[in-house]
Length: 356
Ligand code: PLP
Image (tube, rainbow, N blue to C red; front, top):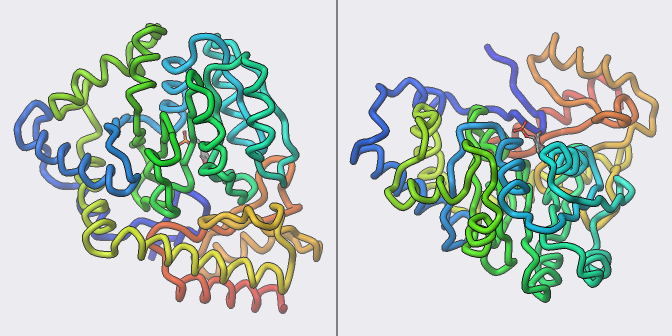
């Protein structure tokens, strides 16, 4: 028996998908590989409602976050920070020597479109970064509405970290004007860690040609050349690609994209109603995430004690609060291939441990 993960990534992976990882290897410069690549493209484009290519990075999401800012910023980038991962994107931007500023917003509050408009009206920026779903706080930013604002500014690229949202909540890349939408597959895709997908717009590719990033590995125009041949530029994580192909087929053709999002909403609502009954929810109302809930520990429970009991007695893992929120909150991941029954079982177990 393994430990069942209700953490906000990595998430529980079905045995069927784990089996895909041990498929006999194929060579990546073959027609067989290219046809798998094309199949993956087709389904990722459906999932993201986009005509843009979706690059595959054999790295965790952080690699694609670097690629976004090192290829997509010519003048100056503005990082909107309302959680640990959006703050990390600012650190990544700075560390790569890309000119940038950050706007800090209290972690329990969303990035509001009016603020984005006010900042872009300064004319100082040609790219912005926003995290769709702050895994640290369980807050989902209004990406669609922010996209409406960004569209008013011709030269501004919209870079979105959708790491813990993609495949668990609707993202309409083309309608919302997202230039890069990236996510590691260890979250709502419910796959093992090690692969990241990122949609890349024509405007971003054009910008990347002008910027001429110094990165050899995360160089979008070079990656694009291979994409056009239905290949990856370097040796890809082939086992992961088998698993991604199978999971995308299951998502798009078996479960159905809309059904998957509806199941996530149902699980989220159940957890959030439960949280309101016994505790409180950290993020401001109206922006609660479809994939992770950060529950405020207003009862002063021993969060570590709860996590340890869940692990030791029940083989279940949830997550503590992130960073400063440690012990002040705990997080439940309700994403991937979990069911409402799994969620009900988890919450009943927590109730019995805490004697609620
Ligand atoms: N962005 C978000 C929203 C995340 O949740 C995470 C990881 O939890 C990351 C970025 C970093 O991803 P990775 O560890 O795959 O590099």
